[in-house]
Length: 128
Image: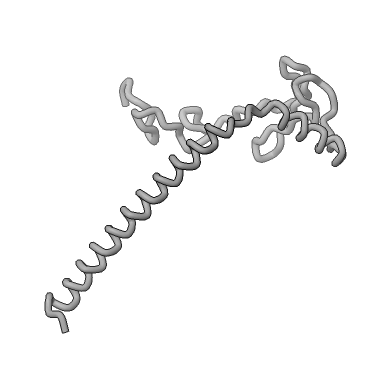
């Protein structure tokens, strides 16, 4: 084997598909419950997935929010948005418009070229 990458992995740094690559069949999940550094209780499941408590890193319960709270949060986030000026909006509009027209022209030319090529191939170059 040597010092190269483990079998089944790429030398370009892609992650292995196997969860137990290089570890044999030994389980990497502890058998008993333990506490993480932020005091979240963690237990294991039969298939090896980790189940965490419904608390976030601050330790408070993160239940559902009411629709009114959600709307208040949305409005608060929209107030933080830096909206473009009218001049920026006009500039962006024309940039997008020119780009779309250029792509439309490219697709039209390619469609016509491939259409003529296919017509020549299947008719043998004889126009009827």
